[in-house]
Structures are given as C-alpha cells and as structure tokens.
Length: 308
Ligand code: NCD
Image (cartoon, rainbow, N blue to C red; front, side):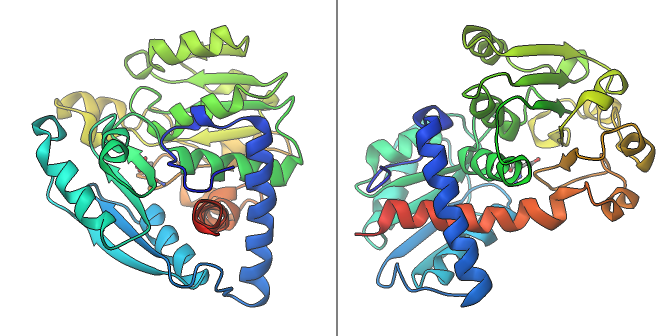
C-alpha cells in the first residue's frame, strides 16, 4: 500500500489505509514495549532534512529508524534557500537520495515536499511544509483518538487556536472528514480562521462544521479538544501576534466544564495555551499518549514505505 510511496498529504489516505497504519502502529507499540528494537529496516537509511526547527517530529523519526535497526542522516537547521529559485532544493534532495532510501523533509514553503518528491528518486515524507500540511502528525493524532475511543466515527472534535497557519489542524481536519457523523468545531479569533479552501472541502464532504470565536459553549459536548499555538513565525507583523497569542488559555477550570471521557491534545510546542496544572488531569493526552504514538506511527510508516 505505501511501499515505495511518498507521503505528501493526508489526501492520499483512505479510511482503509488509515486502518492499516493504525494496525501497524499497534504492532510497533508492542515491539517498543517488549524488545525496544526489531531490525526490520537493517541496511536502510533515512535522511531527516529539516529546514525549520523541530523537536518531536525530528526525534521521533530518528528514533523510529533506530528502533527498526536502520541508519539515519540527521540534518537540522539547514539554511533555507528559496525553493522558488529551483536549483537548491532539487540538488540537495538528489544529493541525499544518493546516500539514503527515504527523505523526511520539513521546509517553510507550502508545496516544498511535493517539489522535493518530483526530484527525488527515493520516497519523500512531508514533515511539515510551511502552513500547508503535516500529514504524519495528523496520522498520529488520529491514531491517538482511535486508541482512546476505538473509533473515529461520531465524535465531536474541537480545534482551537491558530487555524489559519497551523498545518497540523489543516491535515487533521481533512482526516476527520473521512469519517461519518464527525462534528468539527473550529474555534479561533476572526483573523486566524481556517482557510477558505479547506472550509470548502469540509463542506463538500458534508462534515458538520461550526466556526466560532469562543470556546466555552462547546466544551461540554466536546470529545477531543485539540489546542494549537499561534504560529509566531508566520506573522510579518509581531504586534498582531502579541495581540492574538493569549486568546485562548486552557486551564483546570476549562477541563472542569468538559466530559469525563474527553481528551485534550496539542501537537506541541505549547507557549502558554495550556496551563501546566492541566497536565495533572488524566484527560491531558499530549504528554502521556500523543507523543509516544508519534513514535509508533512513524515506525509504522517507515516500515510500510521501506520494507521489502
Ligand atoms: C507542529 C508543527 O511543526 O507544525 N509541531 C509538531 O510537529 N509537533 C506544531 C507547531 O509548531 O505549532
């Protein structure tokens, strides 16, 4: 299914494919818990080519490869040269394709992973292309929701924060739209609303979507509260950023208004949107479940792309 394929957008996944990824992630979880390592990818090498900062995505991809017995070329803080100039990204990608079997790329421009894939003879995985997409994050987010609720049908998911610039919510909203009876609440300041094209797509897929500026009215009906930070690096005008950054702050009082069965997620880094006191609540899934699931899902994806 994914053998030899790029992962550029969540658009390429069907529900059946997601079920396969979740199944494989479960097996990877077993491996990590029992043996820690299973050399399924011995002899394979991954390049992690990161033009933008990353902690979790970078580290989990590298560790995923290690735990499958493969090697890696870790490149962080690569100097950014405009893809628009053509040559640079193409040359870089072809260089690392000569040394490795898969390239995981994070880059500030929308569409950069797709361009990289056009030039790369080896599969390319999009680890975030500017404000575009972050497909592997959406898969790990969906897996986290699936493990908690044993389904992705019929859930009410509230996405809150910077819905305009947050690539994780762009990818996650598309994934959620594949399931029936999903309700999506989009909570953001007016200036940071979900892009129109995405709203259009959700509408076409008949998803029950509501946009609003306040979080309180939907808290008691929410199954998954997905919090995001305001994406400072996407602002040219930092005064607007300063005005918007503390628009929503999740506190223990917020959780007091939520169902006992609900969960709170965040792709991280957080910069104040969720108070640390919330971490003590069992419903806070970002530290306890979501991050580890990132490792299992990325192991699953690497295995599916690379194994013979
Ligand atoms: C996110 C990203 O890079 O888009 N981080 C991540 O990969 N977990 C979210 C963010 O930076 O806000």
